[in-house]
Image (tube, rainbow, N blue to C red):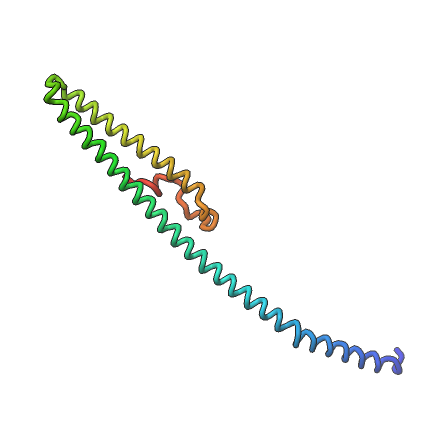
Length: 152
């Protein structure tokens, strides 16, 4: 190796390296640091919002479940009361009204309430399947809609 050209090459290598190092240290590193801090803050904010959405989703499910339960019980009670009032109203006019017919009306009321419950389960399962939060929570939505909607 030539000693005359070796020393200037090392000199310029050190100068170029130090210049590049100072540019990275003073200009690029602070910008990268700010970007990483901002990204971390955004991720924390996203996690917080996602947790709030999960809580809101659970509250909505409880609200809907309780609403379905109350409306179902109310309608079944109304149907039962109407059946009893109809039979008490018909009894004086039709004394030959048999108790078998009354029992058949009660069976009819119970079958209507079962149909109503089945319809509510189907409606609720379609609501759950179309839920915008389903993808956010992964597998936390129960597979059986009857567990969500109605527990008679």
